[in-house]
Structure formats: structure tokens, C-alpha cells
Length: 131
Image (cartoon, rainbow, N blue to C red; front, side, top):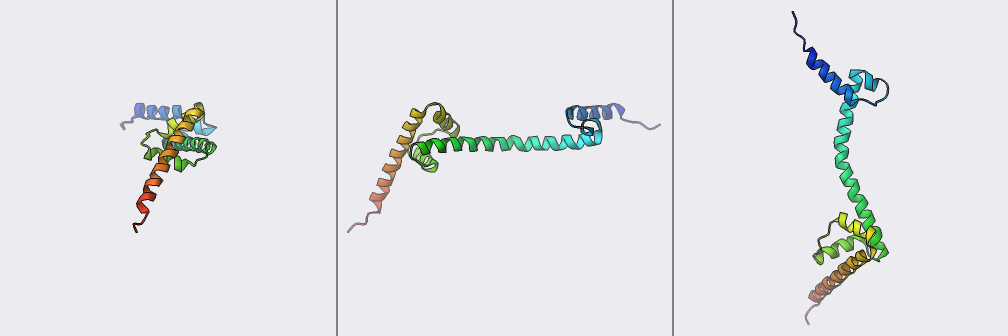
């Protein structure tokens, strides 16, 4: 007599079909279709959990850039100025400040602008040739 693994097979099929609930037509009824659709859906979910983080960072940068432009500065210059001034704010916090506290963001931009000016003055002083 041949031994079948009925219990495990049925459980496996039930698990896949349960994950396929809500899919259209045979994609939630037929095991083979459901298995392929679920596998693809899981791989997209894995990929897009990582893509979501990139997209959110892009939104933060777009918001910061818009707020910077309102204060007469480019995003890249702001980030450079913050590094020179040793202000360690991440892009998420900068974005929140730009949206919820425009005066505070303006103060941060001014600090970055001041740090950029002092650093350019220092480099200009070093580049002057001695006669």
C-alpha cells in the first residue's frame, strides 16, 4: 500500500488558498494558479517594503528643497551648510520642521548660510598668494 501525505498536502494547499483570498477568478480557487499568484505577490511585497523607504526619503527631500527655495537656498547647499555647522538633523526631522515650524526652519537655514559664508571666507583667505 502506498503512503500518501494527505494531511500535510491538504494543509499546504489550504495555506496557499487562504493567502489567495480576494484574488480574481481561478487565482483564488485553483491551487496551481493561486500558488503562482501568491508567490509573485510575496516577492513584490518583499521588494516594495524596501522601495517604500526610498520613496519616503524622496518625499522628505522634495519637501526640504521646497522650503529651502522659499528661503532662497538650494537643498544641496543647505545640507552642506548643516554639515559645516555640525547640525545633525536627519531629513525626516528637517521635513517635519519645514512643514510644521516655518520660522524654525528659516532659523536653521540662516545657521547653515552663516556656516557656508565663514567656510568660504576661510578658504578664500588660504588661497590668497603671498607677494
